[in-house]
Length: 158
Image (tube, rainbow, N blue to C red; front, side, top):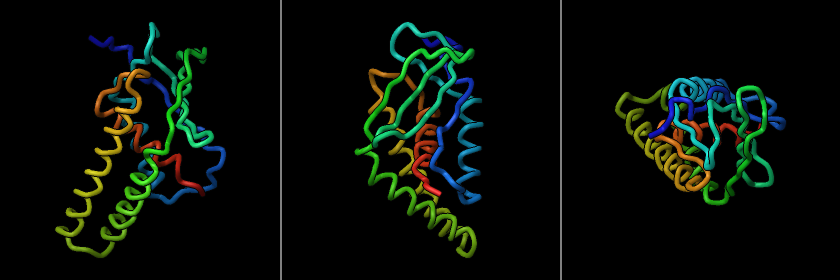
């Protein structure tokens, strides 16, 4: 049984290469962070006690998780290769772009159809992330979904 303290209480994206984002992507980033802080399960392997402060960054084709306590003391760092995410992220970006374009001029049924595809790809990305993090950290579905959103945001380059 998970402790209520086995969660992320603060999250930061290391975005040193980002110049600017579209309003839609910025909205997704803010919403993902807000939702993540409100409801998550994050329990790194080992005897680490939360709540945790998490910094995410992309470094040499790896998603790096820097996990600290709430006082900033480094507890652990782990990473995973992004190779298995490349095509999924590319496809997700294309569907999101279609969705944002559809909102401007398409019928509600067309928007809904695109949104179903977008949610399906998002769920697939979250499941892949959760699978790849097995043995490193325990997540719930909501946490994996929000972290996948933030992984996508980190892939945006100015």
